[in-house]
Each structure stands twice: as structure tokens, then as C-alpha cells.
Length: 329
View 1 (cartoon, one colour):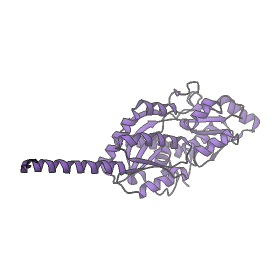
View 2 (cartoon, rainbow, N blue to C red):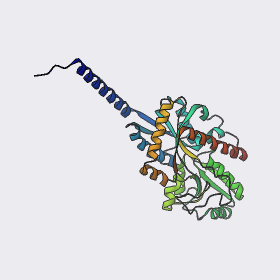
View 3 (cartoon, rainbow, N blue to C red):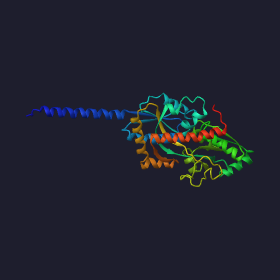
View 4 (cartoon, one colour):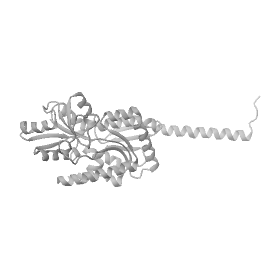
């Protein structure tokens, strides 16, 4: 025989049912959330690989959200940056990028279509890295000095060096290297590091400047040779490779960064949630090891720390770019 339910017990059961429904709705919202992770370079390059590692790891930390890596290559990340500016500031569109698009492009392009200081907000930094100079497998040089000697003898002092984007740090580095060594070096810009790597592996171009994450796997396999790195110290993933400072080319010790940015107006609560999630996933041994193996120095930067890092790096390269006499295009 059923016992009558007291009014008090009925109210408790109703409250429990409502709580269960709300919790279920919250889980459904988390699981249905889609985060668009914009990348300004084509699939197959170092930045794309990093985005996919981070995106896969963030899914669990963000309650089972779907994280979609969206490649918008072109103009050194300019198209992806413009897409970020146009996105809704709801925390669901992020731009994973390195220094070039945020710190360099606005200084070398007259109308980039975005202003990082006004249109974006820093969300989370997760690594720094260095750029490197490499020679293709078909180039006889085994060191940077041998490359310089080879260009002088075989090329009559003229050479072509590939770079992942026009008016980039690698392009300015090629200019400084040429002036320092009295060589006529021309930077050949590509649409990202992936096509540059393809031409280097096919011996279509003798040398290139890009990030260590772009070069690391082919360097390890011997398909190309990194012969010099930027930064203030040799890199743990290639300890036998000297820095440019060791080779007599100082002034390139400040290292670039990788970070996530969101559209201006994104709520601070959303930014802090993502920043906390990034800090947690890069601390996981499996994620940390994969990123470190790519040549990154992994470490979390809060939104404020990433903003400070970006401003400091921009100031350094403002001075270098002006010193080269470059005129924005």
C-alpha cells in the first residue's frame, strides 16, 4: 500500500528533480560548445601541429567542448587575424599564433586590417621558441660558416634563402646576415613553413629561416641541417648547433612567443577559464613532452603576462625594423 507523501517531502523531491535538470542542461551546453581555433598558416607546418596538440588536450579541460582547428593561411596570418576581429567576443573563437602576426605585421603592412592593441585581448601564452637557419640536404655546407663560404665560391656571393612569410623576422634576419657577411642574400617568401619545407626537402632552395618547430623533425632525420639558432643560449633539442651570437651576430637574443588571443570585448571570465585550462594541459607530462620535443620552451603565461611579453617583443623589433630602413608596404 502506497504511503502518502508529505508536503515537505514533495517539495524536496521537486527541488532535487529541478537541480538534476539544471545540471543536465549545463552538461549538455558544455558538450555542445564549439571553440574555433584559428591558425594563420596551412596544415602541415609547425604552428598547425602545435594547434592540434593543444586543441585535442583542451577538449577535456573545457568540459568536453569541441575544439576545431581552422586554417586560414595567407599574408603571414593576416587573414586569420582579420577573421578573429570579425568574430563574436563570446570566448568561442581564439587565434593561436606566434609573434609574427601580432608583433611584426602591424609594423610592416600599411593596412593590415586589424590593430592588436584595440581589436584583440591576450588570453594565454604557453611557450617561447627560437628561429633557426637551415640548409637543405643537397647543400654541401655542414655549418653556417661553410654555407657562407659556399655562397661566395659557388654563387659568386649571391644566394636565395626561403622564409615562411614576407616582411617577417626571418626575412629581416636574412638581410642582416647578408650585410654582416658581405653577401647578396635575397629572401624568398613562402605562404607558410610547410611549402618552404617541401622545397628545401626537394633541394629546390638551398637554405631557409624558420622556427625550430618547423625544422626539428627533418633536422633529426638528416634531411636538412640546422646550422645556427637565435636566442641567448643553445637549444636543448639540438645542443651542437651554435647561436648567432656565438657566430658574431648579436642582437637577436630576445625570443618570440606562442599564445592565444580573443576578440576585444570577450568577457574576462571566459578568458580566465581558457587561460586556466591552457595552464593545466601544458603541465600534463604527455603534452609538455610533445611540445618540448618540437623545440618549444613550454611555460604558462597569464593574460597579463602574455600582454607584457607581446609589448616587450614588439618594442625590440620596432627598433630592428626601423634600423633596416624597411618601408611598410
